[in-house]
Amino acid sequence: MINVIVTYTVKPEFVQENKANIRIFLDDFKKLDQSTFEYKIYLKEDGITFLHYSNYINEEVQHEVLNTPSFKEFQRLRDESGLNNSHKVEFLQTI
Image (cartoon, rainbow, N blue to C red):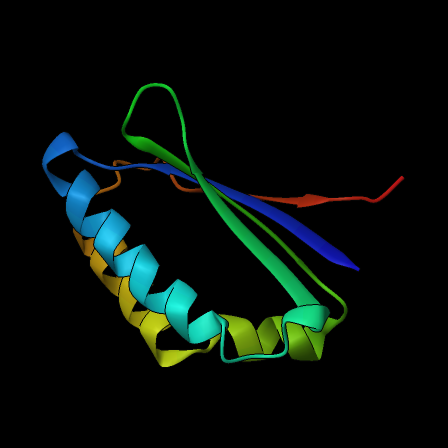
């Protein structure tokens, strides 16, 4: 299992657009085999920090999910919004 947490903070004026972009790729993720991965997104109390939690049964599934065109577009738009070095990726170990 591959478990990942990604956090990043966006500018307040980009929150609604980011939420809309997230909904687009989540809809596309529903077309994939849901038994092979899990992807959840949370908005922290500050209202501008997003947390993405995902797990995948293997690297092939991770690659397929993360290369979904709408997800790639989400990443591009998110990164171009100006994250001010807040983007953090953490790999978790299952216990």
